[in-house]
Length: 310
Image (cartoon, rainbow, N blue to C red; front, side, top):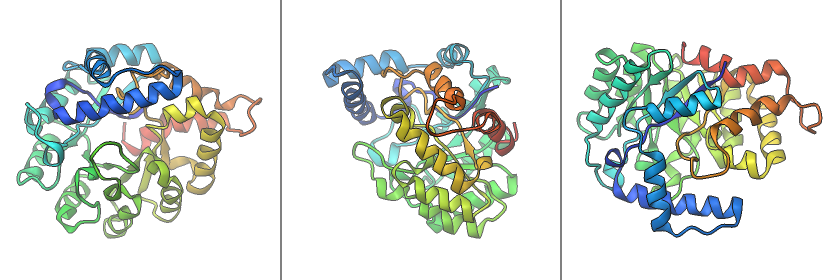
């Protein structure tokens, strides 16, 4: 079994225009690094839209089938207060996510996602979980807020009361959004104040991965996923393997989950099928850095099954 613990569904009208422009620039940079080919930003934007638009989830299901992924957790993104509102309201986007999860109940698990500074944030989260059947909460601090801001505490209390996990972006970000808000150290206050709340620091904190490792080492309720490390695993496999090995050695194997961060890397050479295979191949005895089959199983599905209650 394979569980993708961190992915998204994108559609042009669900995200601000600025996001698409900045994403195209980022994807062009990654593609140039991987292939040496240079793609103009306007051309890459159109390519992104053609590859990423998936308003029904059908493309995601096909991609899962191709990659051998059994279940995927999808996380809405709310950039509206940071870089401009999308054409579709964030409440409606959350509802669409829930409807797609209902359409594929054995394959897709939807979280609620909203900027906590919105006046109706808590009501949308509660509606999503209590009425629409969403299974957790997604926060995106690079939009302009800190995870330990007391303004977020009613959301944490609600999550704790409802016994659903909270996942947040941690790590550096591209474009006009600010990385400083996504420092995983800001989770420390929350973990201490809500010891029964499961908190996921996504992307292993990227450049702050060692901070995430030691947070998990000290805070039993903090978990992580390594979505977004796909390009590093492809371009610098030994660096990725050593980092993941060190993360496991410090944090323990039971708190780390596989994720794709899909569909972000559809424009690159490493598709989800290749990403899954990279993790399965960690057991190859020819590698300098070794992983057991039990560790790989926990990374690919067992940990997500436990952490998310799947």
